Amino acid sequence: MEGKAMKAVKAVFRNPSLLTFLLVALVWLVASLTLRGFGAYGHLRYLLELAAVIGIVAAGQTLVILMGGIDLSVGAVITVTAILLPLISPAADPTGLVGIVLALALATGIGLLNGAGAAYLRVPPIIMTLAMATFLQGLLVIVAGGSAVTVSNPAVILLGQARPLGIPAGILLWIVVSIVVLLIIHRMPLGARFLALGANPLAARLSGVSVARNTLLLYALSGFFAGLAGILVLGMNRQGYVGIGDPYLLMSIAAVVLGGTSILGGRGTYAGTIPGAILLVTTTALITVVNASPGWRSIMFGSLILALLLISGREARR
Figure 1 (cartoon, helix red, strand yellow):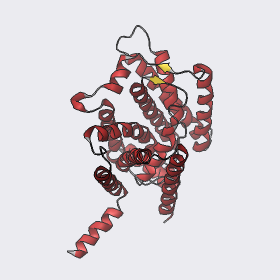
Figure 2: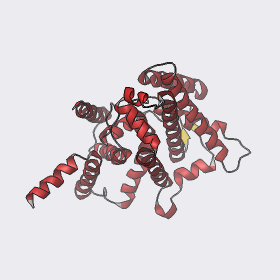
Figure 3: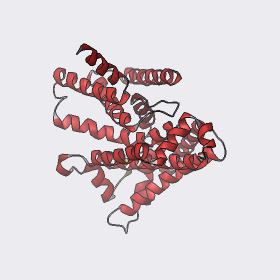
Figure 4: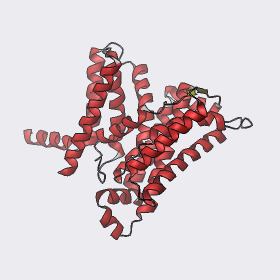
């Protein structure tokens, strides 16, 4: 019996996704027993709603990192979507769906530009996406002038505020995104190609896998999911402003790494990113509860991200 128990424990530690899920459950249990109101349904639902935004952004980030890349423009894409959607939504469209389609097309187009720079101009993804983020931030300052933009799009407001069967629409959207991304990674040839390019780019090329085509597709998907997250953020806040997407850049990367995906690519799954996003939101909430100053909050959160990156890098070299 002891031998079986030890094998079960070792199996858990060898499965980063399961380990992160168990860690989330443990943190929630301890916090619920020690902090008044933490375990209330309304509070846990609120945490999941916040985690949904990170999880949706991290969906695209997971795919990009699996192929050995990274997207540092997701925060800027979220901001672009949140600010420009109210400005480009046609007044003649009573549903607001046209504005959403246009905003998602814009976000996907930004992702395509990132992919084209990385694939055809051979610009390293970290440089290409960072340059894109810098360009977009400057553009937004010119367009918005530092002022907030209020949303009146009925579809966006519905997405951010609706609670069918008591469940926030953002959480339901995250569930749909999760199913789609998991199917891509584990049930479609596309996912196998992403993993092959991340694990051994040269062998994948020799096997006939198109690096350029898959890079374009990956960064387009990353832009799309960032745009989707921007729409959700806009609906939840009812306004967009410069910098609204900035916190989600590091959180999206941290959620991916915390879920067991190697930052160097070729190994991982979105199944680990899901609890990774929940754990990040929970950790942030607990830091807020203990009344830590904003400076200490940044130090603690930054230290967590650095530790996760170091652990991931060490595991990838084994």
